[in-house]
Amino acid sequence: MTLSLTLADWLALLSHFLTLSLLAIGGAITTVSDMHRYLVEEQHWLLDSQFNSSIALAQVAPGPNVLFVALLGWNVGLNAGGGPHGTALAWASAWLGMVLAMLGILLPSTTLTLVASRWGHQNRERRGVRAFKQGMAPIVVALLLATGWTLTSNLGTSLSHWPMWLLAATSAVVVWRTRLHLLWLLAAGGLLGWFGWV
Image 1 (cartoon, one colour):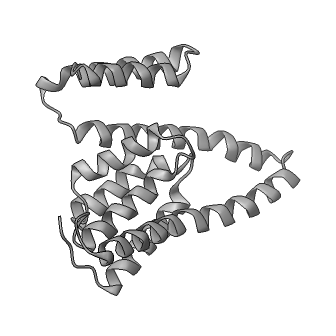
Image 2: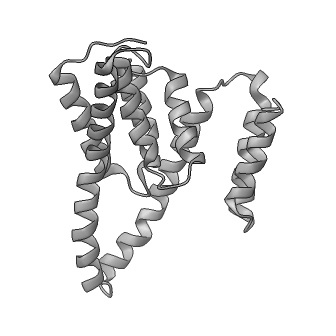
């Protein structure tokens, strides 16, 4: 995939991630639905396969959960530079896309978190602060459900994909009702995918 991005497009990429950063309650992964809408459906800067691969690769790699944003920016930049077989311009564009995406997703939320956590700690006994913390839990759960829906519906919503949907529902119930560590579920899903069962 080859794109031609203008300065306005690069600034739009940065500003979109700056905006999403303030919505990323519960982590950047909760904003995947809007990232997909913007990068794949609206701007056509990424393919569905690139989007899903970026998230999958970052989730299995050790390190912070937010690394998928770096890969999304990297792929946008790589596409803008002519793809992985392009010139040095392709690699420079990839670095630019990665830096803009990460700067956008980290700067506002980090600043807000620092200020809010200091204020919240000083006022932790106030009823409003306790109510706010309790009220945020359903929002985080809803955003995570939207992320799960976006990632699984990209793979197909027809009845022929029933094993994938069954695996997703089973995993959700296991996480909800047991204390089984998530790494066991990731390993099981990886094995099922390796054998081609989902």
